[in-house]
Every structure is written in structure tokens, then in C-alpha cells.
Amino acid sequence: DVKVTQSSRYLVKRTGEKVFLECVQDMDHENMFWYRQDPGLGLRLIYFSYDVKMKEKGDIPEGYSVSREKKERFSLILESASTNQTSMYLCASSPRGRENTIYFGEGSWLTVV
Amino acid sequence: RKEVEQDPGPFNVPEGATVAFNCTYSNSASQSFFWYRQDCRKEPKLLMSVYSSGNEDGRFTAQLNRASQYISLLIRDSKLSDSATYLCVVGGRAGSYQLTFGKGTKLSVIP
Image (cartoon, rainbow over all chains, first blue to last red; front, side):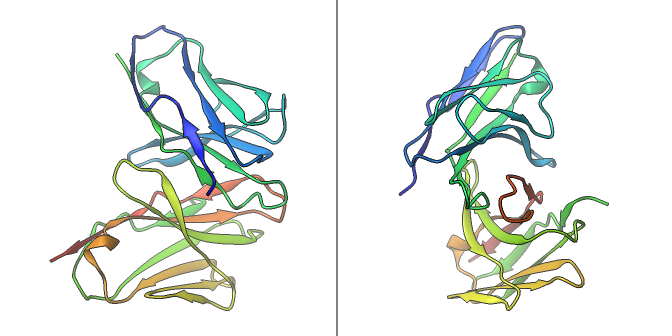
């Protein structure tokens, strides 16, 4: 089975803190994604990466950055957390050539106070 | 017009009932279509892909109408374990990275 692991399930951070959300996949997938999900808004794509060191902005990249130094790891960074970034963050991966076959991690619940 | 629209529900149905969810999409160039299931506070998981000819997986039947840009999911003989939120998902052409998610339809199956 594909395994996408998000290391932090529940976090509480203060406004202005730098926050790292880590994601690791074990299926050698080329593509990795970060989404956030909010009630009434559904899933929204923040950033994605189709290869090591490559990144592309999604629909809502403002306030976020990403890092993909290794194929299996895709990190989401909140440089200065704000309360409007309180959300559930979902990491996902997919193989090249089957980009529409996407596998999600269990999610990271971030609360910024 | 929103890219992928779904009735948010909730749909409250008794066990054994048949329930249908609908979804419309705005991008006529979309090439791939899916239904995902998401349990409360869990990640979305693929329920089934949707093919032009329609497809069935046990109690679940998915239909696609490209002319009307409409997707449906039918659940027969509802079980308590079917209670979840069902997400309609639309993808672009082959090789496209972008999936567009509907906001989901919440289903509660009641004993």
C-alpha cells in the first residue's frame, strides 16, 4: 500500500512562529502536493512539486513556501504563522504518468493562536 | 460559476435506502473524474473513478454525462458505514497535475 506520512498530526503554534510541516512518501512518486482543507471551502492546492527541487504554486500559495530536497520528502513552511492559517493540511503524492491517482496523508491539524 | 459544484447536504437517509449525489463541473476540457470518500477528521480516499460508459462497484454506481458536464454517484442499500462526506473530483488532460475538488456532500445513514 502507498504510505504518505505526515509527521505532525496536531500542532498549536503562536502567531509569528515559523512552522514546518513534514511529509514523506514511500512509493517513489514523482509528484507531491500540499492542500489545506477548511469547512465550506473544500480542498485548496497550496503548492505542488513534480520533481526534486522543483515546485509550482497552486491556488493559494501566499504565506507559504515549500522544500523538496529529496524525492520522498516534501515540506510545507509557514514563515510567520497567522491565525487565518489555522486549518487541516493534507499532503499527497502521485506517480508520474498517473497524476490523477493521488494518495493522501492523514492530515496535520494546525491551530495558530 | 464554481469549477466543481456539489450539493453540500447533509443527506440523512435510513439504512437500506438508495441515495444519489450529483456534481457539475465547468471545465469542458476535463478528462478524468472521480468520487472520493472522506470520513470525519480523516483524509480523502478514492472511492471510484468515473468512466464515460458508467461503472459499478458493488452497491456504488457512477455515471458521467460529458454533454451536460454532470457526474453522479448512486449508493444502493445504504449501510451505517456509508456515513461520510463524498467528494466529486475532476482532473485535466492526461499528465495534468491539477485536480479540482468539490466541497463534498455529507451523508448520514440512520439506523
